[in-house]
Image 1: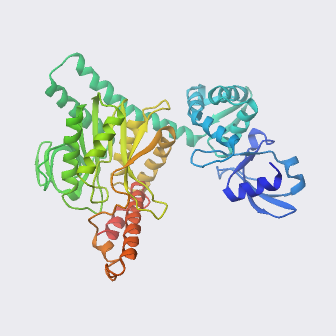
Image 2: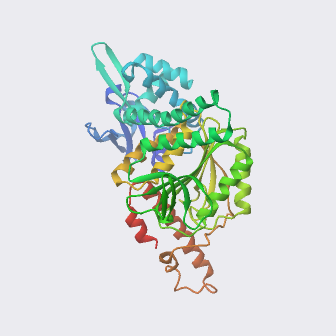
Image 3: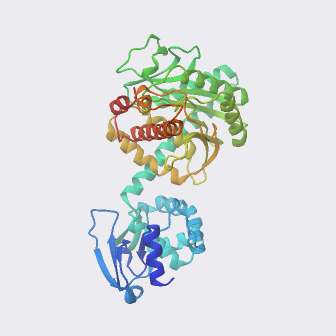
Length: 470
């Protein structure tokens, strides 16, 4: 690519690159900040702000390629049009294999030549491209270069190692549940006994990881006759309406999560669970949404059958409130799906959309995401939520997540809104200003969805969310 074409392409697409001529210990990210007919300015920096960067360096256009051999940083969330970039992007889908090799190596590091070999083997690229790819990850502080008397190495950065440790820790929660649940099959065949054991097992594992300010029980949400297998509620700020041991009736405002536990997920248990979640969701709106999940230990249903049943259920039982639906369904090792909202970054209606999770990259990601979604609804300090979110960010790059079907009409607007949202259109005439009212409704939906995501991530507090939606 001619130098002027490259500069225009990189600036237009806001792309970053590294200099292939750099040694591993000086590999930085480059960004073009200014260009003219005769010169170009590049900002060279590390993602790790503790390291000293080169800063802005000026190059003469006709000398640029003699000093810089640019290699684009290719990531999965960008759309590339040139075939060479598309091919590298596709090959990088297997980058997790390199991470796993490094993680499982002594002290989480490999000699440079061995690391290049693993990248070549895992991604199917040339040694030259492998070397450049490694440098892009060094510049982004995913990998680091280290030198010892024994040689020069590529290691996982502390941040990457922390995320990888957390992934495996979260996966171990699922493994613990799975291994313990399988033991009872060897000694007991009575269905009810096995079901009760697995429900108690799930509760006992949850208690290890959920703060004591929350109580985990079975029972009812006030206003609903549906008994829920597991209710997590805030016992610090709310007294239960009724409590006898671990059987409770609680106010909806106190609910953090409701979870249906099934020994075997079939079409009947799936529909029954969805009906229970729907009944509780329709018993009035809360400023703070709560988690709604289904966790099953076994199933003969394939993902597509589970999807069809969920889609059919919500066609027959329309979603009329934001978050008034299932959040996640998980069968460890078999299938997992969650509901999220589309079109948050454009002007179209944001609708509840069913997404499938495929654990394709060496870790039980589906189960991890179930617990990530659950933990994000816990009302804890902002800092704790931010740490939780940072750990989980990597999960979505480790799994194949695809949107399948919108569960509503494409012009969906929730039937029920908060007074504070209604006020934004109360001065308008619905008959004569219908289009304007609809646009405000659409933006209100997006704003609330984004605000809830911010609360899940610890960017805003529960009190701020209540203040905005009452």
